Image (cartoon, rainbow, N blue to C red):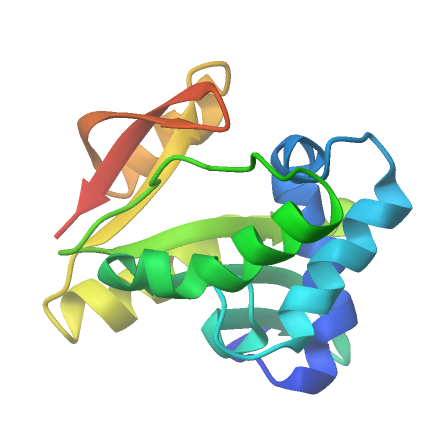
Length: 184
């Protein structure tokens, strides 16, 4: 398995994998529980440059010729700039009052979403992607990584803490309270 920077050709796989990770959040963005609409919403932004879900901000895990994992990561201080096209699109097409909370901030590279193919879950792919990001951002470049974890997901929190992430606070995203973890 290799982990590499994503290309636009990876967009369909990235959209499907990120949707696995953020299905409920995307449903709240679009105001409906339709997997097809959610997928095409995400695909639109993965294929488009200069937004938080763009392939430009993604890495993929490839096993042979299959993409089995994807992660969206970007500089937290650029959240407003990267989110603006999404907010505009949601307000225009789904919810004119859409105003999501800030999920990250300056001083961290934010792991927005990490998804692993359902056929490959439980094989350590998510851990390998996280190890890669820690090596790339923290070890080699002395940067801070941040992410949010749901309180109802103690297994994910345990994994993040095992990798060295520490709780630094609480954030709210589309009304959901999430724990904010970082590693430096």
